[in-house]
Length: 239
Image (cartoon, rainbow, N blue to C red):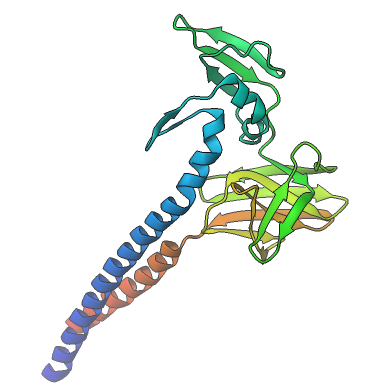
């Protein structure tokens, strides 16, 4: 009937309006979340990198002296940095070998002591409430194997084997939105040494997955479902 058709048209417009509102609200929430996370974790990472010397797109270049470099060498190894460029000579630094010297005096060095991206460690201190841990990368390594089998910007798969309970250290920046699964079961992600992330694993063979699911991911799923429902209402109202 005409009345039923009119009601369906009204409902269709209401559904479209709701979708537009949710899309706008989700976008604003996403931008707010990104801003808060950048303000919260950006300075921490930059402060972490300053002693080593680094290039930051937002704040420019942080030069580092040879003295600071030697004091914070473990940080560089932990970041899997295989190559180092320095204006100050580093020929006598253990673990570095000069590959190339430019006309301006910049030296390209290979860092043979860089650490693998994932390995097993024992925590020096542990805060279960805040889900934070501190590890000594030089003294806390334990026997075991961990191998990355898949790596992308949103998913990391790891096979781990250990004879004792330990921490699986992942040399990736800690960032909210990353979820961890141990043998298919969700487990908490710990912030390690204020910058990196990892999880606790018991002895045995395990499959570990890190998956990036930020808040706006769920907003996208909801909006997609509502969009399909709205299209269905519109098509039905035209019949």
